[in-house]
Length: 379
Image 1: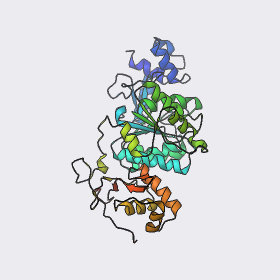
Image 2: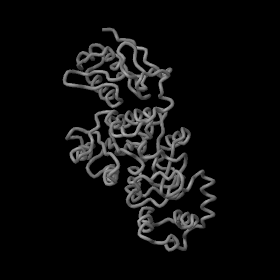
Image 3: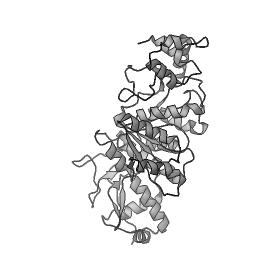
Image 4: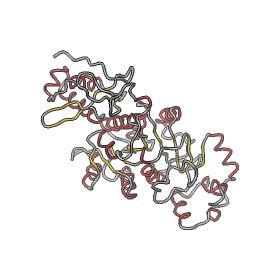
């Protein structure tokens, strides 16, 4: 193993992409040969990292998170704030575009909240749009999240997400990057960043991707490793934001109908519910049961709409209901019922069939995380 100080000086040298340096090191280049006259003094870099609360991790260090399925090209080092990420089999990545629609941002938030409540760490890239929605959904569910950045950890980018990153740190989440302090968020940094997102996760869920989207590179990186599951949320043929997702499904990615499809991809690993999502009393399968219908209980995402709450309450009678019936029972417009059903499907609380919609779980009482107190709307 090369001297740690040499690698630290090389890691803090601006100019060459870390992924390119990793490829050269893997090909047998000596770290000292890759240094240049502008390379900083490792001792000064170490002091700066201490001041910023950043750890420098190398392959082989305890907690190195890329041991199971190293990315290609190799990752030579990581700069980390927060705890070591969980192993990939306990993580799922949620990725998509920066200009995603409100519906797809809500989809990412709901899926992330359900995964976090099931004990799965949510990994994403910290960008606005789908990434930010995924991190926020995990935090709202009291779960863990990992932010993989394409710049230095001291660089305020994107500014719109600085409050989100503060919440990640305060909740015990992790921010990491290949890039040293001061590295700007250059466009060339983001495709290499995506291979790290894929390597950190046992499954990659693409929520929104136009043709040629950078999110597709994350999916390709997961698929090429042979150990990562690739999943995609489908969309209408005329939805340009879904074109890449539909292509992935055509080419063999798992279609995501809701939370259960993502959990099924991770099922070989027994995940533990997040502490804040555990119910005080549970049945033989570890899930609390709703009174009356005996359905299992799951957390309803904090950002769930009032319409979704009314619809799941109406479905608690353990019978199939069509959209027209649900509209009559809840007093909602049919279009709002349809949107609420989609929200509930993604949260793993309901499913739609040719005969109507039905509840497959009931929301936990947010006051005590126990079975819900069911209040039926007037018929």
